[in-house]
Image 1 (cartoon, rainbow, N blue to C red):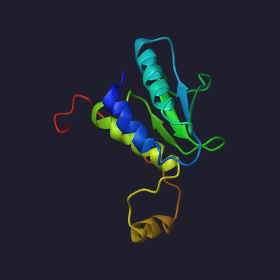
Image 2: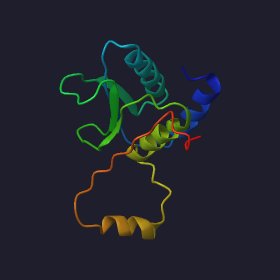
Image 3: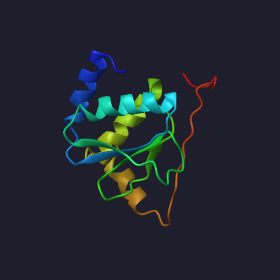
Image 4: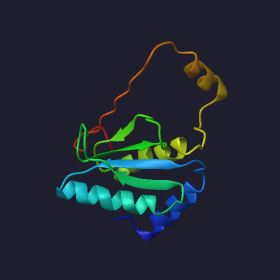
Length: 133
């Protein structure tokens, strides 16, 4: 699914992952699940810190997957195959969950830490949106 050049580039980025990252997939028997499994297997094979597991019971959506640390629910979930412009979001999620710090100023990080309350952000993409590249 990923060409050799992209695999090489991704593998270089994944050297920045310093903690174990688990990709937990909820898949069914459909073609989209097959494609998602193929992509996730390729990505997981590029770093010893990445593992791919399948847990289909109790899944809210299939096909989908989450990026997490073993034993923790980070809350990053993808309900589509992240290719094209969405691939960047997958890479950033892997890096940040894997211990690579985000490119955010210390001042901004402090403001985030000082927010009161519990927050749940949901981002949707539309492959047919005329405003998206």
